[in-house]
Picture 1 (cartoon, protein in one colour):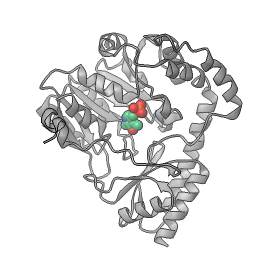
Picture 2 (cartoon, rainbow, N blue to C red; picture 1 turned 60 degrees about the vertical axis):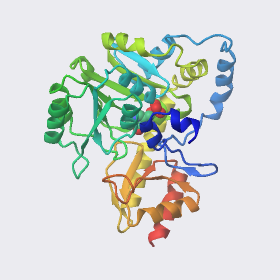
Picture 3 (cartoon, rainbow, N blue to C red; picture 1 turned 45 degrees about the horizontal axis):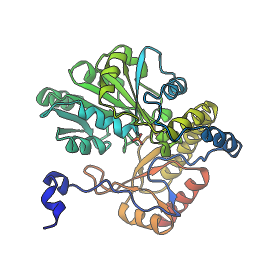
Length: 353
Ligand SMILES: *Cc1c(COP(=O)(O)O)cnc(C)c1O
């Protein structure tokens, strides 16, 4: 037996690492990235801004300017606190680190796999509650799981990944008011959704929001934020590693996230493409296309594995969820540029045609 097999916790040995498939030279529609690069006319200014960064120094520890930039970009009221993470994944981990041994994290399923993985890494219990057959929250089942397991943290992605829908607002409000848990609404896809719980933070002391810039054009920056009551943020901030937001991210985001009009314009373009892509999928016989409030679409396809492979062979990478519980024959495609979407649709049509 090797050193590491003797040494490592057996529950970590037993898990499969989060798999990121190779995607060189492929049309990448698997990870909800934005298809839009930085506009040419901004590159010179951006580089000048970057050149001013003092890379011999540690970053600004509290990233004050960046938090202000994010407040303006996302219209976050001054009375709420903002905590930054190296991606919102890091903030999920930080929340788990705030829990005590024996505590339980509860989420809905299917949803974002990191909630369960991070619960495992941090030795917490994890409890998933199944969504109903329309991928809506099963309120009675969720409320009885809350009663039975008394969770410390409840994660709900809103809109949900990988299903793409949001949930009934009153069901979420009922969950928030019927638990002592901190309820974390993960609004990674806020830019593509009709509704948000941002303003509800003032109403519910146990509600916090997660957001990220990954799905609005800046996945490479690794920058996420937690928004909550100021006293909640002040306490959670004790768990944040010093300098977790590096200088290049702070400087880049301070420049790039000022471009609110450009960011809004790109989000609108994705919404229009989402409608066309969904319509195009709907015209293909045999597919079931689920409604989306995000920059991706979940659909069910006959023998999904074969379609996934056909797309891959022809240079288009999407996400195959067909082996996941309750997602038999389901695939998830990110809304890309008009050209990328057309390429994708062409292959799907030919595959079934
Ligand atoms: C993509 C995604 C995230 C991860 O965001 P990062 O800021 O890139 O770490 C978090 N939650 C959900 C639901 C996501 O889909």
